[in-house]
Image (cartoon, rainbow, N blue to C red):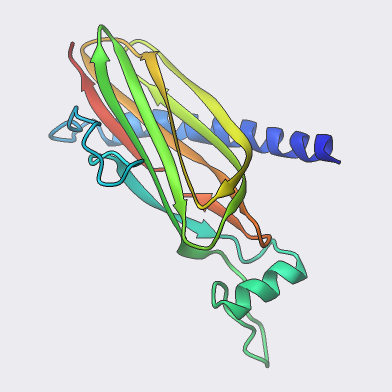
Length: 199
């Protein structure tokens, strides 16, 4: 059973990775006019895991694709709307009510960048994460998945020495889904950060 579950999450990671990379490439054009780069000091955290200059985005709770038990839990805690009793009830995604996700990219030196990313769930412990991080710079782009079991409402991680190139803008974004202990699924709304690679 766990092998089947892994295959489903693996496929989801590949799909999210593709979506994240499309977002990074599209963001290159959309954010080209941004006036100033991210500050370069990631070591002044506002909390132990989140850099001060990290870009934040909400996470959304999927109120549509739930088991009956998870739906009952979500409704009893006012995470998802309850049926009104007499008619059609939209069971759409409840936007921005699942927590916060973040990412931060900074220039290290010689065309290399470091990336830090994570999330904080406001609806309970996450038991599995299926994330994908994408990055692009003047001379190179890439990405990597980050999936695994966990038992915490917060998560932070990062990668060092990603070669993106020199003398231009570098971007990073994170997307994916986290699975809550009670059966809910939260989607990261793909925060995207950038920095100028000048050293």
